[in-house]
Amino acid sequence: MARTVSLQGFLKDFKAGLGDAELMERHGLSPRQLELVLQKAVEKGRLSEAEVSARRSMPAPIVPSRRGATPAPAVPTGSTTGGQRAVRSVETGASVQDRFSHTTYLIRKKILKIFGGAFHIYDPAGELVFYSRMKAFKLKEDIRVFTGEDMQTEILVIKARKILDFSSAYDVWDSRSDEKVGVLKRKGLVSLARDEWIIMDPSDREIGILQEDSLFLALLRRLIGLIPQRYHARIQGRPVCSYQQNWNPFVLKITVDFSDDVERLFDKRLGIASAVLLSAIEGRQG
Image 1 (cartoon, one colour):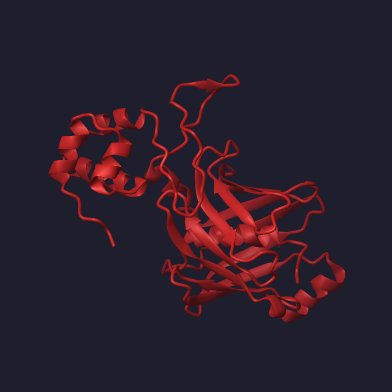
Image 2: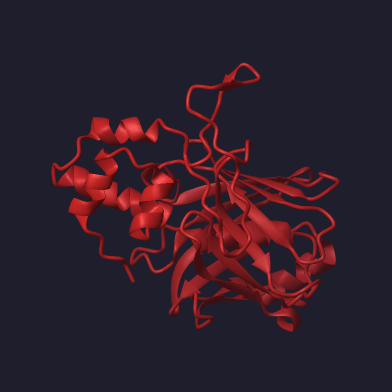
């Protein structure tokens, strides 16, 4: 439930020079809610975009997370590292939200990577919008999704509930708001022949399914290993997304397509997390 904030009191503290961390603590706001309040103030003409932009140029606060995500230290805008302009550790809500606005994405994973796993996710223009890294030698899988390879801005966390369980459930969290987005649970026994995942809402209620395209092709893939995989996601029985693997012996590529989701039933944060999980388990069916 959204928190009601006194805009007058908020603006008084804002203009008094309180920092983001103090504003969030005093008014009980998350980083995302802080951005929304500032946006509302601009729309009402109570603040100018110049005033908000001036605040955005200040170092961003580090906000502790209840479920264990470790925020990266803030880097002041304009500082440099290794001859390149540094990237701020926290981006505005709008800029991160834009990364989830695309209809299609391309995921690349280097198959020959020895330890752990790294996934690059690109928008239709070929720009890197997400970067995911899976730690090696973890008994309980813990996958983080960032806005770039510098791993300065964490946006999603995908954590397995159990240790080395081929039918484990994975909780997906929004790192910015500390909000649970949903759950992805693999149907272990069924997936021995044909991969199938249950899609659940934040309250663990089943809302959809993610399934390999056909039993016949799934069995052939397990016997031959050279047939690209294809998955379809359905929410409330309606098609919302497809995941198509493009065969390459050195680089795993998966095209993610949300164009079927005309009613916007599928939270793209959960859709991207699903794609990362499918990439992570490539070659480990069953």
